[in-house]
Length: 455
Image (cartoon, rainbow, N blue to C red; front, side, top):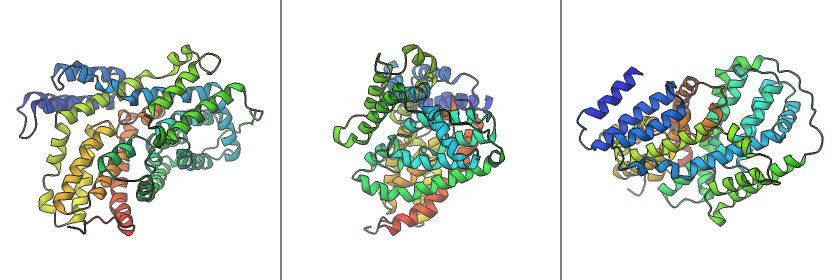
């Protein structure tokens, strides 16, 4: 941590290099120390989130206090709280335990079958719950119940495997469809002119490959957990659905229907989530009391996501994100005669940018325009270059604050920040390999070549 503090202090006091504003330099210093604090947990994550806002103001990395709080005015933190409430309702009404017992009955106490069941459910549930945060908020309760009923401890390798899959690769299923969450929506908007069906064709094979490789990697890391015997669980919830379960299902399906039809009504995904939140807490309709909500919803999630979005905005507005990316890829003109090397450098350049910018929206807002500029300079396909940096940025998580769905899992206490970081490093390698040796040949095959033939 001392090394992080030294680096951060140097960002604050030394003269800024050419092309970087003083505000940008200070924001980079704040980003460094914030990421270090989130990773080491020297301070509680929520305290670090508020410290981040204060530092942005005191360092003059932003124009005013209002700009430092910009992340708290974004829909994402409220979407997260609403989704967590849906998950809490699924647990309280007994639906999570019912689904868990049903799943365990079919898995027959076999750890591998339980893990496979989870992996298969990810892409299938994407059609019903496009948002990874929505799926994670519900599935984390279901599989927590499964592990508890089977008497599998929190620190067991099987528990870690299940939760790492929910934490790190469940998100990948969402990006396959254009309406699957923040990543595809923002990336498609930045690229421009891409349809739902074209997006699915372009991303289905690379992302399904990443899902398979990521799930295999988790199995290898936690393979000892798949040899343990799970306790036999009697099916005691085979009766009809209760009224509370039915109300929870109806409210959740109503929100899902609105998410799936957003192309018609154009509502922000947070609106259906908040409508479900209101229904679940309303007397005579919902299944939760306000006391249930206050006690069981982790407000750390809200603070961390909101403050990370403020940091992402400060990095973009101050020019620090663009300066960092352009510094890393400054050697590209020399390499312009080798398209594959350009692709490799683009991927490698995206890694430190993703590390410093916790929010995926901020990362995409910085990385994709630069990728398009590089493509135009080197005669490459701008769409392909944009999707390359999106894949490597979207496939990795180095710390829980980088994803709302990751925070949902992390707060349950199954995984440490070190475990998440090292798995993120391994997924970085996987993402780069898939981008170079699966995505590029596949896109060329379906008529989207890397080298722009028109130039």
